[in-house]
Length: 326
Image (tube, rainbow, N blue to C red):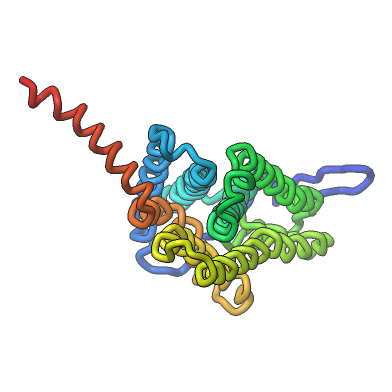
């Protein structure tokens, strides 16, 4: 019987790395092909919607404000997140290509999580923008400038890369001498490193699996909740028109609820949720927010809605205009 694992010697320590892993995905669930069709539709809508957001922000000069730097970054992140996840999922499970090499698995883990982390950080940056705009309106242009917004988004990207490189680095130190079956729909962190538990010390990975959600999900969520407590308090103590102020926050609050509630419930109840339900819930949490974000912004943000109408009207005039003139 041939050995599926490749030994790698580093400083007199032998690390066993399998040439591939097997992504088990959704097992024993009937009619799963319909779910893959649904994922395809979600991916197409997400791609089109977020591309439209980016085009409108780029074209309309009135949207070249610090706030929309974060919105643009969120749209870019949503495109990257769904592209890193959905095409690979469809390729694996529709065409029975569930084997993935060791290096490809680590790359898949890195890119899926980096964009997931950035979605959380982008929502936090948008929350900071609303906090300053409503609670400190006179200091808004000083505290939230183009430069400061670029610095915030750049720092968020750098921090996301740093905090993700640590668990990925810990995985490269593990030996996989047992099963190569990952019980998830992609190279998920916990199902991956838990395979090495029989023959490696996975304590550092365990620590990171608890630390990363706290830093990337819970702390940003607490900051967002605290910022909206301050915003609600400010709305009752300042003379700013309440209807207008709340409209500027509604779209952001909806995005926050759609993103944080399902994923936090999944992590909190991780050990109590059956594997298939957990996998489906995580997959929906990964693909639905990027699809809904542009829809919510177009429908709920008056400023963006008007910009969208102007752009569509301009495109329609260019398309129909020559026909009317003949």
